[in-house]
Amino acid sequence: MENETLGNYGEVELIKIIEELIFKKTGKELLKDDSFFIDLKEINYRESNYKIVLNTDMLVSTTDILSQMSFYQAGRKSILMNISDLIVKAVEPKIVIISLGLPIEMKFIEFKQLIFGIVDFCLNYSMDYIGGDLNQTKELIVNPTVFGIQENSKIIYRKGMEEGDYLIANGRFGLTGVGFDILLNEKKDLKLYSSYKKCIESVLEPTDLGLEAFILSENNLATSSIDSSDGLAKSLTDLMYSNQNKNLGFEIEFTEEFVEEKAILYSQEFNSSLEDLVFNGGEEFIHLFTIDPKNYDSAIKTIKAKGGNAFKIGKVISEGKIYILKDGKKNELKSSGFEHFRMDS
Image (cartoon, rainbow, N blue to C red; front, top):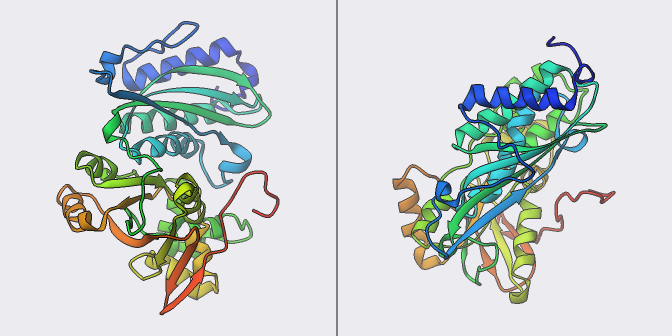
């Protein structure tokens, strides 16, 4: 049974199996109707000054799943990449509906592992998987839509930063740049890269996302936020674009505190561009925030007191460009990161 392909099952049977797997893991049943209905009282809705917040981010096998990635890891990643965009806004994810595109030749055991990866990561965040859609496709597609709710005043939008604000991050950069550099070159023997296991794991199984956004939100300390899942260069460019009416940019302090030690070692050992590993790695899910300088010390102290992590990596400047400050020199960052459909990305 485990090695049978999905061609041995029909849509109705697969939906029934998903229901059984979810119930086994969570004790909850899928909603069975033409639409999905959510009692707002169940997700702590109280007054009209709350917003329902949604995000959807599609995982597609040809662009998002590496050959070394298990189906469990793919399922897990499909949820993480969606909830990251809510959490960085200080919104707690509550509910997910998922559209699944499944190839007929997919094995049942692969399908089962995918669902377990999805459900297990939902459980990590006490989030309910309530239903979705199922279809036959040429490649695997997982398309979650995540829902949360938050007070208007506590949501940290992209728009809101000002000149002079400090740019802070809740993690160091470069791990996934190294991981992708190793994993995307299938000629490389992974056994030769045992000292970079952490880098490889950062791609195949990203860690949890942190509580820094909620801490900053609760204390009204952040002026804007974004996650770096598209790569640091792209994320900074997107943050600039969201505030383009102010013509703002960034100066990034390229110090050892800013970069993961393993990325520095890899760059030296294999003669790779450290700047490329750091700015164009992608899928790091590090969270970026801007804060007023007068609130910086208070913000860092509060974050650390509650078990979080954050540090300054740069500042907002009154010019719509991104500069790197390194070894006493200032150079403009030309890369704008990866984009789908661009032939030169």
